[in-house]
Image (tube, rainbow, N blue to C red):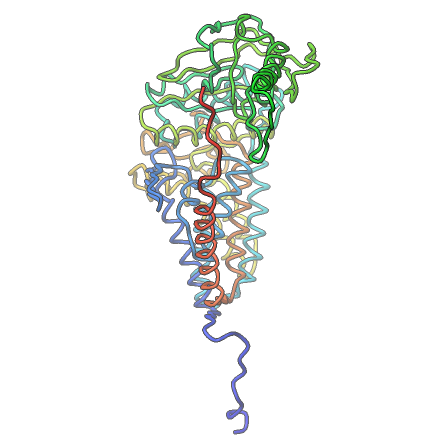
Length: 543
């Protein structure tokens, strides 16, 4: 009786929302499944695109899982994990962002009935981790190496990997055209890991086929100095000087003043200013001596020109020696659409490449850039890791078959859990069929039968998007780097295990409102600051 009358112990602030136990876990799983359903339809060559309209009024049309996940602005704490794995897949491998989200959603979906039946989450987690290790070992075993091949063979193989990536994108119709461009660009930068050595410039207008690759650097015509019309627009074997200094008159500080006793002295001060500029220009040999000059070039483009031409960026015009100058075979200023481009080609170090993209609408070119980024990443990964596997759901079906077979050798509950993991892997071929409008059950049954052949000849068979049947993905050149699948299975399994290991969520509404107030006050402060500083800048000199 006395125990019933004990006062309640209050640990957390009033208004704190805590949810725990089985319902909490099921709720988290449902949230992750809802996120997976958003990107589900974007998978594969027949995947649909999403049009996302944000609060600023910007419109994005995208097929890329990571881009969609970033723009969705998900607030559910468990579902945010899926956003993170999509981002990590994008930065690590570049492609397979939709795959990784689908895998994680499907692993959780398969785990849900077990959780509802009272299975302890740790048992599931243990089995899932074992299954993922077995799956990765199997991928490595099935992967085909492209190392040791000649450059031409490598180019052709890498082109096929790039084409597989691009086939699911908006520019899939011209995948061969862009695949060869991407392969040339990646081979041009060689072993350099810096992705910014491949520049992508967007010029609205024209069509996709007007896009071209520059083996060197191209950038949009920047600020022009007076007299630029007289400058020659093409040079053969030029010397290139890269300067990171101002070649114009500096305005004096706000509180600087000069006191003159004689009005004639004023002219000598103006002359002194101009003499400094003339001295700089003399050291650079300027426009009246048949020299081309581009000013206010972005930092990124300046660094790429330095890498390509072998020049060094100078912060002074004194002591300009031959060693700091860059060289290239041809420099020209060329009209692209309604823009003028400065193009350096035939660069000695050849460590850079620039893709100039053309297309009708801005949104289209933006999506084309994202698609090319994925293809560039894939080709780089394939070059480095040099192993590829069959795409089109073939590798997923083969691992699924292998895990089902392995599960039969295990006594105990984990047989069921590994079986459910194997079933979850079939989501890729099933979704490829659904997105293309085929009968997924029929195609999956054909695939299961083919992969179950004891000779193992069915291992490379995947979904044939064109006919609605099954086909040898290797023979059809539907390839993807093994690292894409390995990373996707690793990340999705970790995410699923992370969600399954959470049994309580504690939410403090006070802290949320405090954050809201802090954000509002920061915005207010910024606005006030902006108003306070109005009118303090100096006007431009009138020339």
